[in-house]
Length: 374
Image (tube, rainbow, N blue to C red):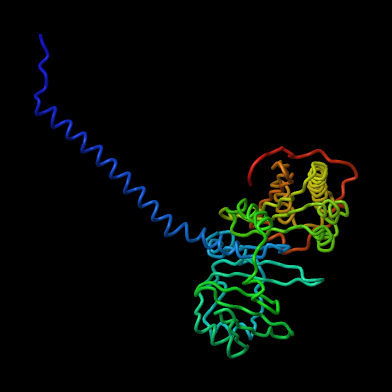
């Protein structure tokens, strides 16, 4: 039996229906893409742009840059735990008056800030760019009342004395929601400075690696980090060898990324030689092993609260030490996870641990060679 062909009308209608479906699909995809694009422009891009704009204005001859995105940090559960844990600062009469007259509360209204530290002889000066919900009229009136105002290049620059010191803080509005400030005598030096392209590119490279972290610090080495560590570290964690190796690093970065109720901390040191990286990785592994041994020692078990000891051990177990090769530079990376249990333990005194300098290279926990970006 011969099969009858479908009527022409049916074929025509079917083809027309298929064309309609294709156009509907194309239109739906176009609408979704447009929605995603405009949503990105409205919500994601401005935040990324603000971050980039702030970091682009830090001086390229800075020795360190610290960045905090308070807007993102406020939404992290761990930060709530951190606020509960941290000691509350004593109420300051000057700040209370500032709050009353300007309505600006940094805990609520400061969105993000980039702070640059610059060496000036034996002293250090600070320069910062901050975004926030500022009442420009009220803040300007407050600064005029207690300080001075001068016009320079079309900008009004306010100088306000710091209570109890001879220093002054100078600031200017770059936009209604952005200010620049410094404790240097001349703010215009920073506002009118032209950054060297080579230095700016080096800072930008490291800022890009840390793009996913709402809080970070980038330190360009001047042989000071090791000495600072030796001066500040608890007795059991002091190590002249570690200080010497840290002083050989060209860049040090520290970054924090909240993840639910924990904070993942990543520290990285860069230098040009494999030997320094290898020695530093071995030493850090040795420090971790010795610290674990100290916490497991009978005397420590007797003296230290069991919950605190467990929290310290948990921190050490989370330690991941690795080596990275980025071509021009070699790096050592240390990753730690800070939990609410560790914060609770940190309220007590740091346990006495053995000397952190291993007598011989310790077995490595993890020194995987890696290439690429952070």
